[in-house]
Length: 115
Image (cartoon, rainbow, N blue to C red; front, side, top):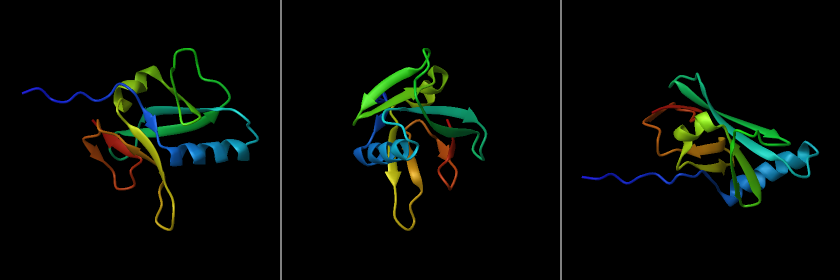
């Protein structure tokens, strides 16, 4: 029985894109790049890393969506394929949320995962 393959892209919701734009404006950046990576660590083994920079790196996979340029480290891309980056606000909001179909286990706070 064949399993459904995850899309080979990463998406950012309009809500998350709006918040990224607000953070860029707060840093005085008219245009920037949201750099996304996966690092070793966290209680589940891998953790997400976000950074706002002025440029992507040559070796990064670049995706443009909802007015935001996402720059993903190539070595992290395999862990993030199919992921939707969202933003959860409000009283119990967590901030940026990674809806990652590759994660087999995640910690309670949602910042680390394992595959």
